[in-house]
Image (tube, rainbow, N blue to C red; front, side):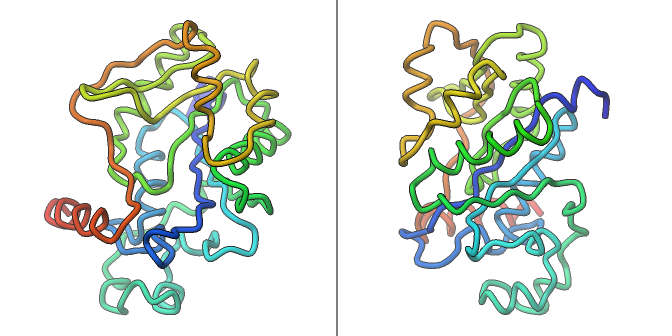
Length: 229
């Protein structure tokens, strides 16, 4: 990967409490092993940005879950030994694993912590935000948003699908200070409103990727994902 590509980091937010699911949703089975690993795989497959995950300190998610060892998955009660045997090699060594003790304060707090840590460690030119519970995110969408930033140098690039604007959303370095002040569950919506006129949209085909929040959301995802794998 070129130095230019290294300047954009995809930050996957994985600090949520999975309240509506009733168990750690990012550890539920997916074609690449579990939902989190699937989302990571999609981001790595974009090929034009580095990838980091921000998870809750002392939470259920560990870096080892990207390796999908059968004993970890069985211990979490989300995968049988047979299912774990068939998963593909993990991308754990390609991912920067970050943790925060403020995840309980909401999506915005996790985003702020992730931006703060990436800024201190790598000084990226931009950070592209992804949600851990969107395993159907297309690598092409990530690639398009990152490339649009490189072409325009704008403050914000947001994917725009046929139905609505959605993730990925990319923020350039001049906005990092404001991102690190975020808190609560609203994420960066306030910033998107504040800088609405500075947003460049990357138009993409099809509907926006769905979140997995409830058991029914997950069942719908499984019907589609495993039929293709």
